[in-house]
Length: 347
Image 1 (cartoon, rainbow, N blue to C red):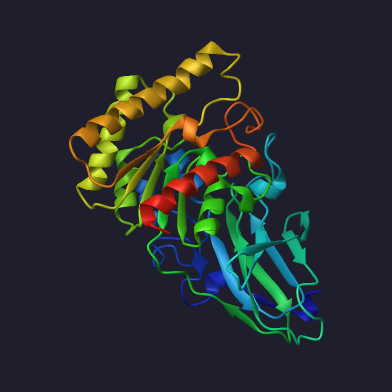
Image 2 (tube, rainbow, N blue to C red):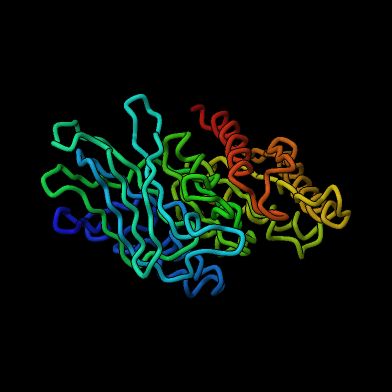
């Protein structure tokens, strides 16, 4: 196969070719999400997770009938409650002329080198027009290197990173992508795809805690919208502590800009109807955030928006376990976020 393919390493493009990545000059040649200087400013668990490629993508154009992807990752391929296709896999979409994205299925194998192979994409004689594709990268693994292979007689062009102001999501494992079956089904990726705009995923499993160090990094991004979705990682906080964390985060952003901020409530737990302590827990967190929102609104804080638990609207089949959404839950959350984002951004 390799003898018939031209292999391209996007990290060696000579220009920013990783979509949705910020701090591109500092992160050149990597598929990481925070700049190297963050290692000295954030906690180690968060730093380690920032090396996962959640939300990052490669866009390219080709008229090749086949697209082959090969890459090596640093971590385990799967988790007990999340398959290898989500933790370590990639997803490819064809960008349609009508603005829609069409899913491409590829055969895959998970060895020392992970491989995804897509076929029957265009006429084998290379007479078809050039088509644009989006390749979503793994949600829960760190990519050491990656190459895209196409027919060596076909056209192939990497698309530079989009420069529009992005939506920035700061959150938990749920924002990072747990427990979607494949990268394209993570709710943040669905939102970016639906809105057709860059979306920076700063979701960190177990570590989305509204910490001031992370708010400082958010403030470095010239965003169109900040989405703060951290309630599920604040379970050890009292209602008053949650209120203060939200107040501090919003005020820290507002000291720098009037960029719209969307506060997202905890979507709940699958077993809350049968477990009173779980019901009390997410209700307490949401009450704490709502108090902060009401106080900020009463003071006239501009461009502040709120998405409630009920507006998100998970149903009993929306979870894989007690808190992480299934593909159905991710679609549900994405739809709720898109509705709010369209109103905020007039899209």
